[in-house]
Length: 495
Image 1 (tube, one colour):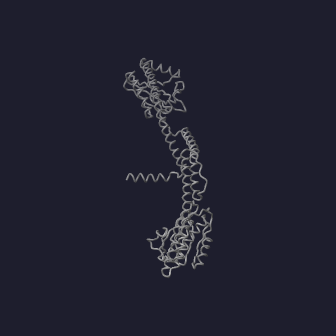
Image 2: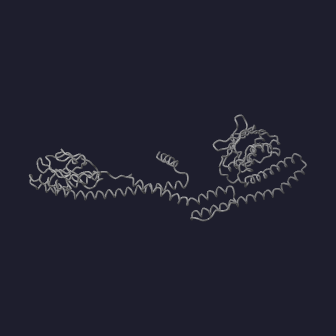
Image 3: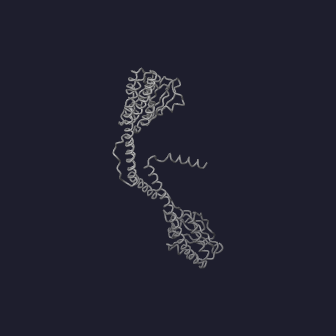
């Protein structure tokens, strides 16, 4: 089950991948850059956070020592002098702390959370507990606009400016205020408020800040531009190889590829050129072989035919001549097959209606009848080869049924030619076999029927060379239906 699930996931992902090599390279580069940026941001964030915690630890420790000294000083003063000293400090201004003595512990709207706050609270509580020997130490954070002082009756922002509260109100930053309270005596609480000097202590780290998004976009655009340039340069030899492979199907005598560039590309060009030479040599050797066979068989066939004509027995002479005719047809069919498949011609637009009418006129002289329905736009094919394909199919239809019905249609860029005859049809088990060379289902093999069993094979080969195919089926009302499909804008290979 896991394997099937994995295969399904792979197929779904493959649908979204670009089909070109250039597109897939760009996707890989972008994925690599994104992963690298995420990893670098994560490492950098961790380092920045660690550095911030270290600085906050040091700052809070120093702050706690100062608060402890302040509290020790006020705790050492006589009770009657404490308010006098506080008034003098407020009138002087400029102090880092706001200090007051209250009758009870003031209620503070504690804010913030996370490791930053925990570091500050732990440091302040630990140092004050150790230096003042007091267990009941309350450490909290408050917003400046909600902080109340003096027995919770007055807001910090409502104090007179001469009391120095402006040192705690740093608008518009409004950093959180650290508030420490400890009990000096029954109904006597010392209250100290101060700033840490870290405005964004509780804001946390923002991954998607404007600066980081801008930098990320600039990096991605730079990678895309450089990747397209580099990949275009790397894939250009592959594009040349693809074009050369397509042209090779049309022209075996095309100039060889340049054997230059990177090592892999040069090696591929060398292999391609070697393949082109070997294909050309094999085709030339095949042509020479069949030409030699044709030449060498003419003389013995002629001698045998002359000797057959000298036989006294008419029945034996007729059978002997029929065997020679069959052998001659087989040789001619094989030679015609080679020549028909080796037509080197350039594709060009061909109007199918005049082409079929021309074939029908020739068959009409032999007693056949061809009717045509439908019309399609000219189709780009190799003219002589495609005419041979249709001629073979129409000749078979007329030979077996005396009448061929041809219908032309086009759908979704595919031209369909349907040829139906009125003959006996073909057994379903033999529909695919008739395309094999030298296969004839017609039982008679006399000189009057002729044929070598190569016509359908040649026709199908030509159709496939044009990117199409030929299918056979028995018509429900009788006869055989041949369907030729040829797609438009298809690369035509060598015949």
